[in-house]
Structures are given as C-alpha cells and as structure tokens.
Length: 330
Ligand code: PBG
Picture: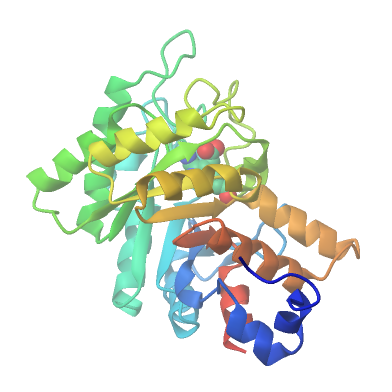
C-alpha cells in the first residue's frame, strides 16, 4: 500500500524545475522527429504555402540546404512530397515512374549534399494523377486495387533506385506492402525499409497538404473508399497486423492528435516502431490559434509533440520538426 495524504504530497515532485526534469516520464528529442519537405519545379525558388504559414515548397537546388538545417538540429530523417507540375498529371500517373521526376531529383540532391540524413518517400499516386486519387480509377470513378498495387511497387522501386532509405506507402490499397517488399527484394534493395501508413484515416485534416501538393482543386469525390473510417479502431489493429505480416518494418498512424487512442493501442498491441503523423491541418490549427492570441505557439508545439511520445510514438512526422528541434536544443 502506498501512503496517502499528508504523508504523501504529490506536489513535492513538482516543486522545482530540476525535480520536474528528473521525474519526467517522457522526453521529446530531436531524433524523434521526421521533417516533411515539399518540392516544386524550377530553380532558385521558395514558394510559401498560404494555408501552411511558415512552410514553403523548395526547388531541388535548395533542398540540400534544408536537409543541412535538419541534420544540424539533430533531425534524423526528412520526408519528401513533390508538387508535380499540373501538365504532368495524367489518368495513369505515369510521372510517378519517371526516374527524373521531382521526388527522384530531390532524393539525389539531398543525398549529394547531406549523405548522413535519412530520406523517406511517399508511395501513392495522388501527386501524379489528374483526378487526385491515390490509385487508378475506373470509368465509374472507383479506385481499382490490384492494378494500382502493381504501379505502386514500381514507384517504390524507382524511388529506391534514386536513393530513398525508407519508402512509405500512404495509399491504403490492400496488399501493397507485400508487393513493394517483393519488388525491392527482387531488385537488390534489401536494405530499403518500409514505413507503412497502416492506419490512415479519411480525415478532414489533410486540406493544407492538398494545397501544398497542388491536388486540392482536382480531387473528384473523396477518399473514403480506401482510407479508414474515423469511427474505427479495431480495424486499425487489423490493418497494422496485415502490414506487418506483409513485411512493413515500421507502421504509422495518421492523423496524429485526434487519433492518440489508436496510436496507444497499436503500440501496446504490437510493440513495433510506431510513428504518428501530425498532419497539415493540425499544424495549421496550432498556427491559427497562436496567431489569434489563443495560445503560445512554441508551448503548443512542444506540448502536442510530447503528447505523441506519451501516447507511445517512436517518432513523429511534423511540419514543426525544425522549430521544435531548435527549441529543444536551446
Ligand atoms: C498522399 C498523402 C496525403 C498526406 C500524406 N500523404 C494526403 C491524402 O491522403 O490526401 C497528408 C499529409 C498532411 O495532411 O500533412 N497520399
């Protein structure tokens, strides 16, 4: 039996900064963070993204410098998302397989400039399709699974050949992890890891991201036919189990803060490296709250990121990664 009041006073453990620091159960470290970077076509250019204040798209020639900032702040990995030129978006998403596309050029630029940073790439077709869906569509607008999976495996291979360290399928097609693992093994890319967006929900929090990658005006319908229903959590465990069985090295839950319960259950159930994606709408919410004087930006940022650690996350993808890492470093 533990003591109770007055023998036990919980406030003793909160009495001074050193005491609070000593008793902290969870800590946020720069190595917990993955920083997403948006890439745009052209040269020598930064394009601010209106709905993501403080975040920009960068041309390939500027990416090495971004990666350098990340590595200097102790961030181990960046995640790349291209804004594919509108004219290159087609029904069949063929630009996704172009070895010289924006993401492949981005991978090479970063690896040339900063060889010791990890590069994670998005495997899905929505940044390359004319209709903005993550897969190929049939005449009735339905996204087809198995044919899409063949293309995703090819896409992952193209990214691996360009130097990606981790490929991250975000499309939510069935069977894609197995197909990607198989393709990577078949071509000698045994060392390339897969981080599966295993429990990815059909969320209203992706709006600013779709602006950032130029697909917001395009999307016909919604993604509820393949992304998960926000009502479900048992289903998330099944998704994670399947992706692990198919060969995922790490899994992800997305979005982040509204799905901390899912994150905690996944981590408890499987004990595998589990990442959370604090998505664009979450970032925008924090920035808007701070701009409206409803909270201190840095404090909101660090508290939400720490919450992911408490919830069981191995790490967090966040647009705040660089600022957070710098604050932690002091
Ligand atoms: C692409 C993809 C999306 C995000 C990451 N990868 C958008 C979507 O599924 O519509 C969202 C990230 C964010 O909102 O920050 N499939």
